[in-house]
Image (cartoon, rainbow, N blue to C red):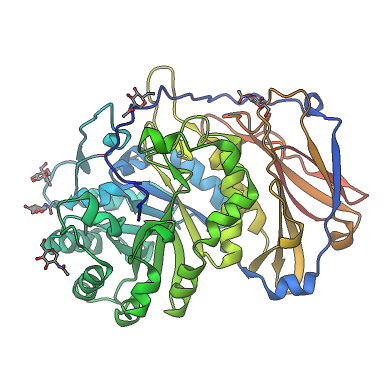
Length: 526
Ligand SMILES: *[C@@H]1O[C@H](CO)[C@@H](O)[C@H](O)[C@H]1NC(C)=O
Ligand SMILES: *[C@@H]1O[C@H](CO)[C@@H](O)[C@H](O)[C@H]1NC(C)=O
Ligand SMILES: *[C@@H]1O[C@H](CO)[C@@H](O)[C@H](O)[C@H]1NC(C)=O
Ligand SMILES: *[C@@H]1O[C@H](CO)[C@@H](O)[C@H](O)[C@H]1NC(C)=O
Ligand SMILES: *[C@@H]1O[C@H](CO)[C@@H](O)[C@H](O)[C@H]1NC(C)=O
């Protein structure tokens, strides 16, 4: 069986320069009006929808950050990265909660804690232009101040999944790290500790495990290590996240959550509250795999359905073991994403569609991965890359704002997909609070690259479920390939990370919404 190589040493020449666009150019909607109109009625059994709905976690879209880039993202002690802090604060301001930050990734398995080392974070990076992964550190050392940064440099409610080193296969390394965290970090800020990153690849891509490394070996080590790590605190034992296998799960071989739960591993370790799979629908790790990464595939809703559905068995397994299921690290294309795909309006629509679909299937949170410099899929670039490229957001940042506004004002939001209405370029989600339908999310994911004469549209009639008087907020851009100029309800994020411009809520008294290709709305009764 061919295993998708998300973490291989690749031969790909580093992708060409970063194209940043810190100054959004607001496009005029009138320029985009098209003649081709397609209309449909949004009608479904609301009572049935509520019954089949799943929890919509306000932190559905959370963040994974390459551990070795933590200081790049959040700054050092007393010198917070104000851009990053503001970007997180925007989400808190709207939803009342900060996304969970998972610090991990490949560098998690290269990290050690060193109490007496002078630098908050010291890393060794060996850049190889032929390997897109080589911008990741090969050795990371952190001291106590690192945990101070985690506490002080982000909104105070921010919680973490903290990645411990399991890859190096030295128990003492993980123990020293958790000892540091227990000593220097307020434990109420830790949602869970995660032991290892992409542990199913250790046999194939590292020399720290035998080539025949299996899920049984993994399970045995978890049964040994986690109880010992938990015992390091005299306080209440910490939570752990288990699994962390990269997928989609069909490529796992024996490394699946299904196997792990069949073996009884999570059930027999106290404190295992979360189980995670990772996943990338494509990757740019080799030229051959990069050639397969095409934006039209990401905005094809039915392909996204196909991708997410692969996790169904893993979700069921995680829940059967009494744990919460996370897609613990994910993004559009492994090995840091692709310019023109991962940093576009299309990727933003894909992220929203992917996350909401996941929620309907029982995914509690998804952790979209980020790193510094050449990580095309990052939601933002935390530092200037060079004299002409300042710190900036990428379109995908708006996915967090979108979810924040979706859950805002709701007590226990739940979500269902209106399956029967979906097509390759139209996605419909219903969001409830208690027994009532509160909002609809409608996505027109139709691919429009801006070069065709007319921009197609869909007109949707929601009057039968929300009434004729409706209000809606629109996610807009010039086209699917736009890397900048995104607006959410008329507003955009400026170069300092603040939300700027007047909020534009649209109203209609006929229940009709016209959605241009590559637009999305949140609709509610007016
Ligand atoms: C991959 O593509 C790059 C740029 O197109 C090229 O320079 C390089 O030789 C290719 N690598 C292989 C192994 O074909
Ligand atoms: C990482 O660097 C530290 C000092 O900077 C060194 O002591 C340690 O051996 C290095 N670890 C690895 C795995 O190279
Ligand atoms: C990693 O493992 C090697 C043995 O394979 C050991 O010598 C080294 O000290 C370990 N480094 C860390 C950071 O744990
Ligand atoms: C796995 O490989 C090691 C040698 O690296 C060998 O000693 C061991 O018996 C193998 N285990 C299995 C289950 O084949
Ligand atoms: C844009 O889309 C049109 C129609 O699908 C296609 O013919 C054209 O090659 C595309 N242009 C670019 C730059 O992708």
